[in-house]
Amino acid sequence: MQLDSLYQEIILDHYKHPHGRGLREPDAAGESAPHVAEAHHVNPTCGDEMTVRVHLTGDGDKARVSDVSYDGMGCSISQASASVLHDLVSGRTLDEALRLHEAFNELMTGRGQVEPDEELLEDAVAFAGVARYPARVKCALLSWMAFKDAAARATAETAGGN
Image 1 (cartoon, rainbow, N blue to C red):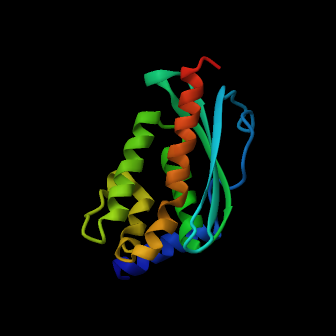
Image 2: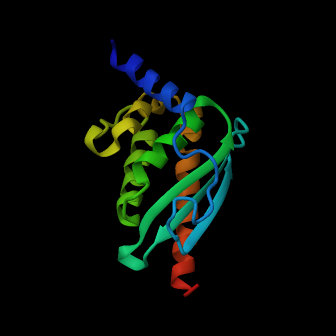
């Protein structure tokens, strides 16, 4: 099986069997996540929409992404990317999650010239081929940008003392 074909299968699997789909309330996983924020992003080029909710526990350097949930509509690439995002960042420290965001963003904006780190990005490497199609890059990045905005809002809440 060729690598591109395998990557397409990974994307289709995440699309057909999404992980983390459905916006969850803070106590949905039996954990109290005191800092919850969400962001809604729209890709005006194609009409895809995504709302991402981030649950953080702890403050400052100890902040941890206890959960990421999402809901949205759009193409298989945007929906599969949100599923992969959920798998990659849930349970990690916020710093680790933001480093993953940077690595995925670099892969997507590299126009197919960036060699993905499979150990770091796991299933997200499947989107390497998408980077060759600028119109599809926004689809793949939609949930990741919403995640970054929601995490910033949740972090601002912790800094505000709420």
